[in-house]
Length: 244
Image (cartoon, rainbow, N blue to C red):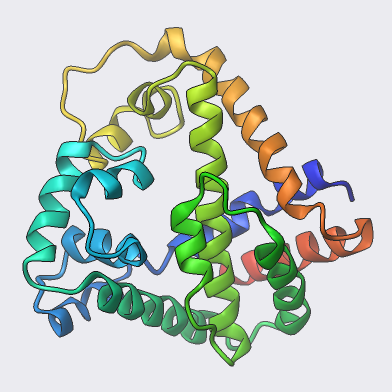
């Protein structure tokens, strides 16, 4: 399997595995450990906490598809109560716990983790500061937790490549959201306020941006052989099927 087909094969499983824990009730239930209410404040400081105690504009630069105003509100409020690195560590614990709960009976995780680790560790951190921060976090010793942790890192890596591709196509983050599958619903979820422009003019460029994303992300899997990429895709497909 070549790199571009590997990217396309793993996208859906990685997105699921790398994000399902974020909005899970068990994750939100741990927010009070940081003095926070369960909700998006914990999500924001947990997901972006590896950036450190920075100005909210720095966070918005990584949370590219969120409204900067929404990011500022959630980040600044959470920052008054919690340390970002502690929040990032707790968010990672939530990811690992989700893996232990949902993947404990899935076979073949050791091989999947070996190949995913190889790709994660070799990926260039250029224009991917959040990925780099998450990659640097201590890794779980058990396979189910590590699978979700590595998927979390890979999801953020693709997201970073996608931001570059979207901007290269002349799209704003909001235009990219509106012309995607979630449309206005996702725009509102990410803190943007109506009225929204009609998305029709952006659809073709969004399609090109997705293609460009695949091409940029493919280089992150060049470290693997054709056989290893096929095994990686099969491993993620097996895990995804177990969750369906």
